[in-house]
Image (cartoon, rainbow, N blue to C red):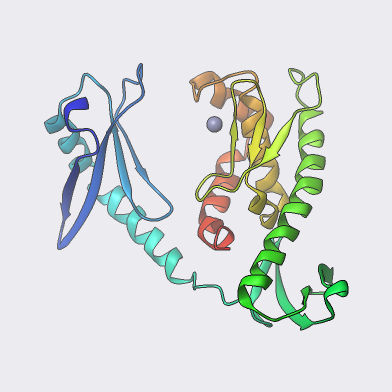
Length: 247
Ligand SMILES: [Zn+2]
């Protein structure tokens, strides 16, 4: 299938025309898979031995599923509006909704803190870009502490993790986490906006990669064993992704 890797096709479903992108699946993958990304893009991973025609047929056969997922992603994104970084705006932390409270203070007193139901951002000038920078910095600080603590807690229940797992924070647009070949775990700092069960699910997923490197059946069996409800939690996190990554 490599000849037309990245080619765009159109799926016609009723009166809807849904574009999708064909991509070569990783070597060794034998099954075609269809993904609807959080931004609504449809990606179809086609095994190397499959023809483009058979891929198109497979997508057509799944037309209703694709349509429903694309629609759901559109509906989720309608609720996500451009951030303004003004008082009263919503900000998330550990799954809770807080109000932003912006106040102007002398430079030496600037900072961010949680107080009651608000995330208070004290800045020398109420410039939205400055507020944004401060808030992002605060999420990173919180992420370093909180995600580190949860990582140790989750790891302590997994017999194959014998050393304190290493991690670093990395802002990515769409991913919550990753695991490098040397075992270092990458975490998106904005994961700290999600509820604890979602955080623990992401950490468990990455720690399972210490035992099973690929998304093999053995990998999913491991996830099932240590968190039988992980699919529900993943769904919850996916549904919030647009909202939480909007920073
Ligand atoms: Zn993974």
